[in-house]
Image (cartoon, rainbow, N blue to C red; front, side, top):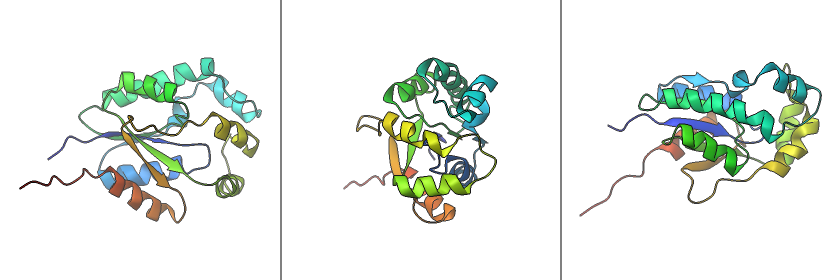
Length: 172
């Protein structure tokens, strides 16, 4: 039996991190932490006003997420974080070396439509362009998987669970 993983569900705003994260956590039998809850009030206010965060805004937020992920090492957990840049993922990995990233991907049109349909979220669709401009997809040397966000939340979560399953060991 393998040790439960800490999974960071990443991607631009509107890809469904807050929807898929809890479904994934439930499927894996581990707790879920909402990355937005780790933002200090100043970050929420800045984004709510339509101003993108800069790296100085993000470091304390990433450190708080990294601390949570570190506390779940060996226990498993799922946490959401945009983790758009390699440097952000490196910072999370420094705190939680075993973390695996699940990059929710999709076309801009689909994501913008989903963002415009949601209610009660501080992130305006006006920041979507800055999110895509900042995004650095997972690189080959990073532990993680990309999962397309087309379909229902249940279909996306099922693809995510399948992507996270260990490769079967074959031998003679």
